[in-house]
Image (cartoon, rainbow, N blue to C red):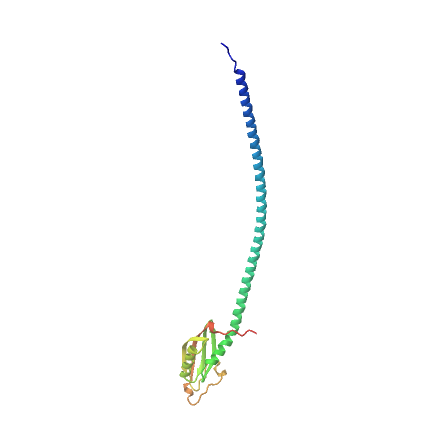
Length: 207
């Protein structure tokens, strides 16, 4: 019987497999290293690009913050100017109030009546004067209610008849004289209040 020794052939095949395994393993290592290098390079480029974008965003943010600060400063200045303008307008209107009140009273006051004292408290005006009769006072109140664009809600506070020898309260004698005749005993001194319409005051015409 003949025997064939196959051991060297097996040994060679094992060596070939071992070499192919080592070669494949080396290639895998090389490919992995190459992939790691490429990935690292790509990540560095992406990181650099992102940092550049972040720098641009930071610059834009800084510029925007400066603009916001400027806008807030301008808003504060505008609010201060508006408040100053409102104050000036209020002072202008207050300066024109007495003129408007006197003009309106002179317009609506009926004949036979003299005004002696005017007292203003906010929107309330107290009028004291002398009239030739009670009807004159009633006419004045009716005109203040219906014909005036500046006054409304007149209320009579006091009215008393003056004796022929008794003068009116101080200040009345300095006003224009009331037409009186033999019926002087009918003259009355009155005090009434009326409310000033805020929207009825006419501003002074602008130049």
